[in-house]
Amino acid sequence: MLVGMADPATTDWRHVFEATYAGSPSKVQERVWRATLGDEYPDGLDPYSYVTRSELRRFALELRVGPGQTFVDVGCGRGGAGLWVAATTGAHLVGIDIAEAALVAARDRASAMGLGAEFRRGEFEATGLPDATADAVMSVDALLFTPDKARAVIELRRILRPGGRLVLTSWDYHGQPVGRPPQVPDHRPLLAPAGFREIAYDETDDWRRRQEQMHAGLLAEAEALAAEDGVPVEDMRRDLEEMQATVAFMTRRFLLVAEAV
Image (cartoon, rainbow, N blue to C red; front, side, top):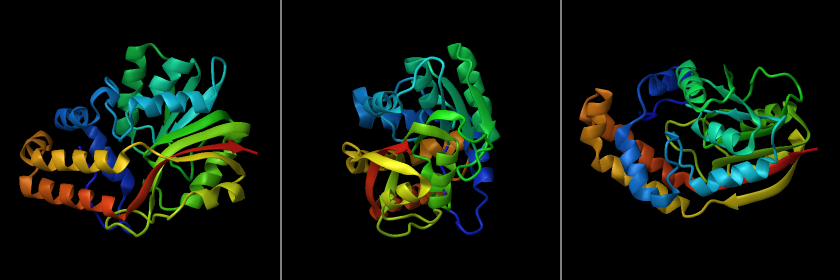
């Protein structure tokens, strides 16, 4: 269920996320997320992120896509957020994720929703898509796991048509958290060299309190989470405490909107 801490220099993140997505979505995490987000919880999407209903509506608005157009969701996970945007806008979705287990779940969800979305394996730095293939690109809380943020932004620009929108959420860090790939203090300087014009860079609502409350809720449910994953409760509690500690390094969780020039 959870992404545990590791040595980021040697971690095979594909292996980590294959294991993460191999099982069913966590009912315990869903309970904690619902308790924290209330009406903002994106019901039915099984989010592996901190995304809210209001943020999803903002994604759908800012991407500026509709029927006959294509958008790409990089780090799509089980597909919930991208499929919600596809159903809302009528645009065609191409989901990209590092883990095949996530893509299998995303395909099943798309089929159940009656949406003809595509899901394929790829990474932020190497999506595997042709140049200028997308009218828009989105990503929800996933960019932090790529080790080279500048290279990732260049790749996202490569697959965008001129005038296309990039909309994503991620975090700025004032220090390097243990067990995570290299982070940056501000993502805005990466935009212009890659060929983007910044439109918005907004701190998301109440993000720190929500994350701290979610992490505290998970710690309180450590025994239930360990039973759900079939792991020792001591290991689960250690991973949860280390995940909670990463919040102290975060300056902001932001929602970025940029345009390909």
